[in-house]
Image 1: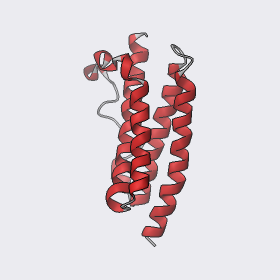
Image 2: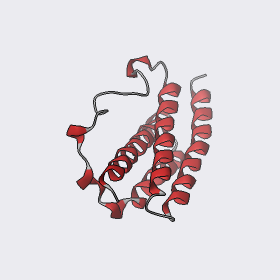
Image 3: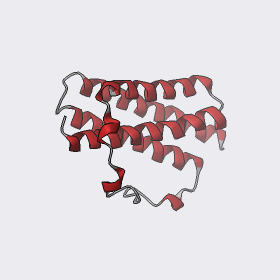
Image 4: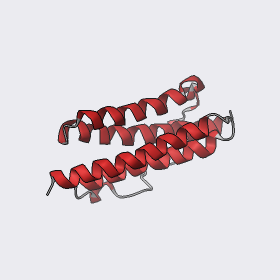
Length: 138
């Protein structure tokens, strides 16, 4: 795997896991939903397991990362609700998975469909958790 591709994989794997972790904490501490918490955690762990053998950390170079201090997606100060926080973090996870899916095609035939499955599981989790948050904040 080329160094640049490994860096893309590493950054997006981190992005997806971080987004899922934020949502996992909402399911755990706000919604107090054990089943949902376990499902989010399971998706995060499945994603991590897919790239465990790649040893991506050796390719990480945060000093040269042009985006490390910039958030190109949105202004963090604009969060207005728990629902928006959850939706933005689920979008991060979904987008990270999409990038992983595309770039893993460069070196694997087995990984892309597995990542796609996780991405679609996250879409379903989004529907469930947004419905639960809407009920909890009514």
